Length: 296
Image 1 (cartoon, helix red, strand yellow):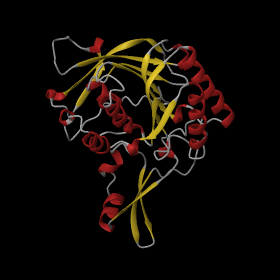
Image 2 (tube, rainbow, N blue to C red):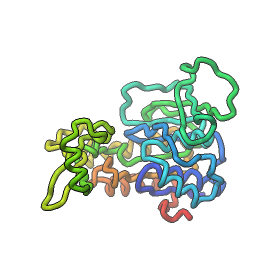
Image 3 (cartoon, rainbow, N blue to C red):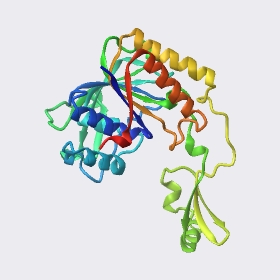
């Protein structure tokens, strides 16, 4: 029997894949194990304008919610809150601190409304009282070499695990056209809210007769330790797949995130990484590759 493998462009689309897998009986609706293979944790705790409780399983509703409410760094916690996962393994090339024993975590929502999610360590709770809205889960930080063997898992891979651009916000500026009044307001006001909005370096420029906000207008590019050569990419892919095979890990479904539009996977490497990874996975598993855009 083949293993479905879905190509996704950005990582929040994994939420669509997981719900699709539940609908089609590929994975159980609750208490799955997630192997999240990524340079980044993506464990942000989001806040929504629309309640996650409104999701009733309709795939189009789930897609709309994903694209309007979820970010690329905050899609795992919502899945945990929906009880899709009760164990999360963040698999990285090298963690600053490894936590192979795992940390007991929780997630709940403010007033049980499903709009503002809140998460943390169980040990930090002043008291643990019965709360039907609170979901508990185990969170592990491990390299691929130490993950548990013989587990049926949901395998979620970001190509930037094999080579990463670093912080793409420091590599490409973004121009947003504004009015002359807004330009003047920004230039005259040292306390303009955008200066403290947490979106990186913000400036304003005039180009011809037009006015622009310029985000991430950095003049120098510094060396990036996370980008590696194609030879090293191949070594990493072989090491990853060999460990999966040796440990008899059994993926029920695989999501493979390109992260090319966000810029986390180098633009000149993502295709090589994807093709090589799929080839190695297919050498050991019978996978059926599809694209998230085909989920209807």
